[in-house]
Length: 417
Image 1 (tube, rainbow, N blue to C red):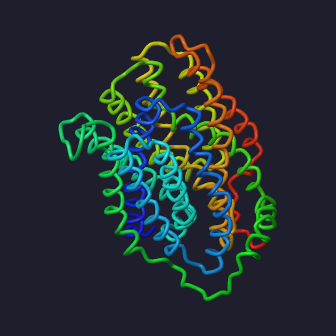
Image 2: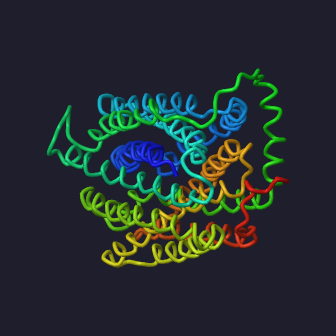
Image 3: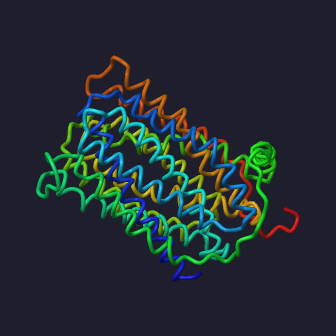
């Protein structure tokens, strides 16, 4: 494992998580609670970004595999992500009446933010050898959750009014600073990370790339275990992402807690997530990727059921800490599993579809969540509890599918793959 590369690679995960947590916590509540926009339309911003990703990411992954380098794509998508997150923050802070414009800008910012991971995840092979992918992935996820903790602590004084940069204090104050901090901390990765491969000169035809996208996907899903993993990932990740995106609103609607309390709960979740990321990486390298994944999914089914059932806030806080451990584990395990199942020459394309499956699921999860919370059964946040319970069904479907994944064979070591 290259420790220098691992440090820079993990720092990038640390950086992008700062802007993600600020918008996830404060923009969502500004839009839904302060501006009164329906949960359904907030969730549709993720569906819009997913559609854009579906139309462009496969082509980008194919071209990247041909030119052999990922950093040019990471640099461009990171810069555009920073730009549109900043524009969203400017709109919210200085033109709050134009919240529909902010939804468009947020959808585009989210699109480029997600696009970054098509290139970033595929660089795992440059950071560590296959037998260390679990540990390296765990440290990357650790950086992500550490960044979220820093993002929460840095932006809290802005939100509470202890520090005011412009205008009235509140949730809008946190957005622009988080975007700027994200870009500054991402610079070491963008400037100094050295790939193992050298850029190849190739002729690219966009028409041919689009024609080949469907055939490429067909070939990928025929790789032993990879197609089944994508299908399982579609279901269980749908539930986890949807619940994650709506968690601050859930706290508001079900338990009516303040932003300060929400911040402390999220810090608890993030501390547990950081521990879970590193520990699950260590476990994955020892007990195997499949067993680790099945254990994580079984835990998520139980967590969603308890989340929907509990009415005691103190117990919910304890449950949130447990949820954090499983947040840290799920992406550590899945990222390492994709690397295990995929031959090296199509790794970038495989991670492209890994990202797409994550986001394509947001066509179903957010729609389901948004429609359920529109139910008239609102007493005690019952509609939100039903929405949380529905997420356990998606995870359970993913668990059933994942049970038939192959064992611990590393496809990258198979000369016939």
